[in-house]
Image (cartoon, rainbow, N blue to C red; front, side):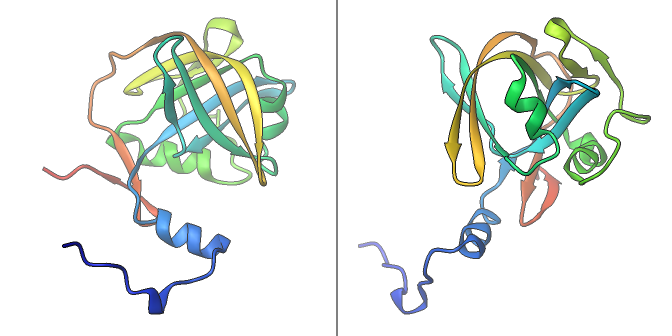
Length: 169
């Protein structure tokens, strides 16, 4: 028999409830990039999900109030970068509002389809955007994988309890 939750402490749905619950959910950390009209844009995402193997597709969420949203809303292609545990500062840079994300020490180059590709990541993909689905104050971006490189070295960076962390042995 499984113990049932204590319904006496249940909370009504709210943004705070959702945040509290998802702080307990460990997630991999990715940086999404795109070419913008006045330079490259990017943001840290923990909402990356594999959607389909045939065709190879993924999804991620982006807030419509995010500084990267205008470029992502128009981009035909995006870059998806899986970060390693050695890249906590890079994750923090791309998560920080108003940060100049593509200046030193961020190492990057222009990749296929003009997408900014970050160096020294665990893996990267260039994806063709196929849909942007409204979801509250966010959009869920569906993208088909065009090409990439899974050969980076290291272990994944995780986000848990409101901070970046690494796997424990």
